[in-house]
Length: 277
Ligand SMILES: Nc1ncnc2c1ncn2[C@@H]1O[C@H](COP(=O)(O)OP(=O)(O)OP(=O)(O)O)[C@@H](O)[C@H]1O
Ligand SMILES: [Mg+2]
Image 1 (tube, rainbow, N blue to C red):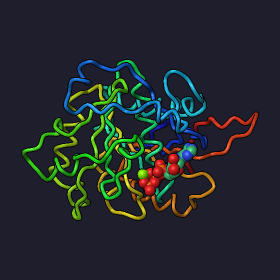
Image 2: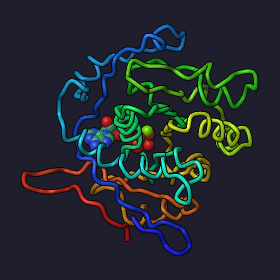
Image 3: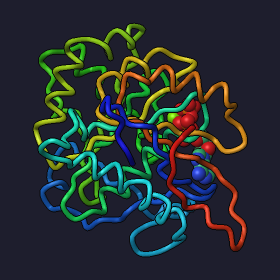
Image 4: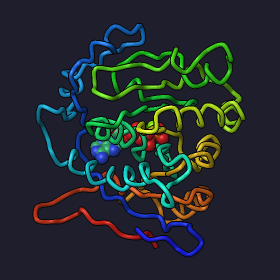
């Protein structure tokens, strides 16, 4: 990973996520979390049945993919002194087009990071028009981000859900709103992000987001994030779409790419890091 003189970093390819099954880290139930009215245990057995990986075992290649993917993100999130990145612990996962795997990568990345002993993760569903994080995790819709932005009486802590996955909390998208883009670009959102970024310095916040080329919400979000992860669907996303999406997020200095849904075959080493040309 290199920096240019301008300080602007070349987009880096974090690695590849093989087409496979999502995984979930099954953490021990926290007694404190379980007492909270915001406690929503994830049905890990059901998730495992759907092919998701848990800490107890299962398919390891997805775990390995995300272990590789998270490293540079965590390094930058935790950088200090001259290396520190503003809001480096705020990481948005986006892509050019729908269906490329943003939610899949955001959930798995959050799960993978939550497995680190000393890092707590907040997974935010910022795809406010078509939320799917709770659905993927088998939970019903709940109030969340939009509600906090609209109601000054509502604190973020009132809507953040605690789970039985160690170190993982979730901020749902909440009620849909036709002014979602304006809300995401609003001062209230900047204040909220500053609060989220600084309240716990050891916390990493992963935002799931809508596609860049279809909506304007993702663009509004990217400008306020320390790091952007752009998911590119193998053999599907066109070069034109990738270039246009990169152009839209060029305001962020720390862009990473995930090449998603790759097909593996024996003997092939897909795990490579490099620069995006
Ligand atoms: N690496 C992968 N291996 C297997 N399935 C995957 C992978 N990545 C994504 N998928 C599947 O592809 C579908 C689309 O993924 P996902 O919902 O994450 O895309 P998205 O970019 O969030 O879409 P949208 O723009 O509609 O929100 C889902 O069924 C998901 O489970
Ligand atoms: Mg999605």
